Picture (cartoon, one colour):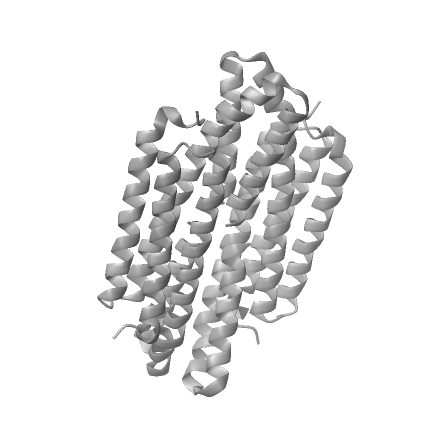
Length: 93
Length: 93
Length: 93
Length: 93
């Protein structure tokens, strides 16, 4: 079971909304909309993706990482390292 | 005519690929994939969106802003201000 | 003359303030302050650096890039390319 | 004792280097250096600040958050929430 199983529906809905934003961007390019208006939409989609990943990450820390920490040992350390690497990718993406 | 009309096909293709990445994310959530693997995909989609917006912005500077600068006057200033605001939204999104 | 010569004093002041924030961070580490409080200060310093670069960039577009655009030719194109590369580094840093 | 006490010297050294970068920026502005070269330096300083915060965050997860998780209860939840909020500020700064 995934750490985010409690909010699966919410995540699915967020991603559908982001998919709608990307399709909106395709329409804008197709209809030769003004560059700046497209860029504003891209910023909105990027922010939505970041919010999604931050909420997923919080659940991951609260479930997967916390459970590993309770058991302790090398697996706990590996989970913290793995989460830190994901945070670094997120911060730099 | 939009400043990006020369690369409309390329932009459309990029956006379709990003749409595919978002749909892939929906599938991953639906199949209870591991949080970290989902986060890696989100970082990839975010990077792709940023690359799209950077290439759109470069065309905007090369066409719309440069043409306004050639005419000069308050419209040129307004175009620079508008582009700078879009860059700020991008940097902070 | 640099494109930002009109606001040199303002830039110098901003950078001195950022230097103060970095020195504050050194003090916090030295006094074993709580990690989260240090991270909050790092976010503030990062935001201040981004604001500084966005205002520098706006002046660069308004002066150096706009002047090159008025002359036109390969130098104008080179200036737009150079600015776009700097924006990309900023967005990804 | 702070979660980062094991690498206090390393953190202090990193921050001194960042302070040096900020002072270098002040010199560049003072000597009217070219905008683009200043922007390149700002990107480098921003990246250095992000690396510092990511290493601090990893230690925080490995010590403070993991220890709270071992005890469990509302304090563990509070620590995860606090770390997630710090990550969100970092991602958005």
